[in-house]
Length: 236
Image (cartoon, rainbow, N blue to C red; front, side, top):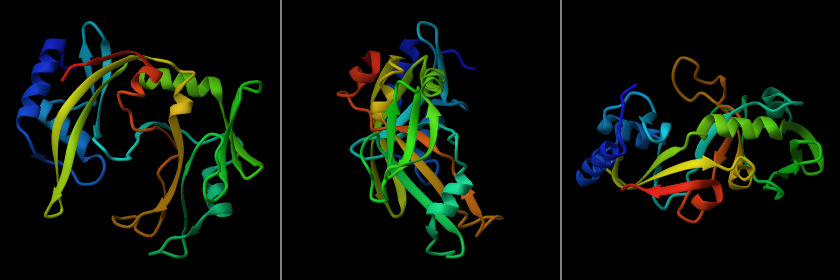
């Protein structure tokens, strides 16, 4: 892994910012991260800083509702296959295949009646459909996973984005070091996604596609940094 100093990463990020609008290296949502990695010349999505340890490099579009995926893990007590069979609906292009895409909050039902409930006494995060418990996650597991994933912290880079002639462009403008996550609070600032779809291209076209059940942080801002991270330092 390439070694960085804080001064070096600040300098490199400033150079990328000075380039102004740069064309995305890849289409779809992952283009922003791949583009930043390409301009920084790194193959992995992490950076080793002597004073901070190995930190995840993440990027986020400014003024968009996109969320940051922390990790994916199927629940206990029910399989994703069961969720698809029981609650899925036909795909528009392949109606014989059931799909289901649901974003779920804690305590608040979505349009299909899905919601989450944190039970500290039982040490579980329950997934419910109206009043019926479908499955669960252990709270200790989720907190350990949050520490494992971003325990050393993040280098989070923000970019403006625009589209021209079907191509996306980014202007990387701001960056922060975020460290020392509070594992008890990340659930309050995250959402749970059920993402069971179908392949629309490639060798498996028309076949079910399990994207994984994901815990995703809501869009991080200067207002939410102090709620989730003890250390939050602007570096660009």
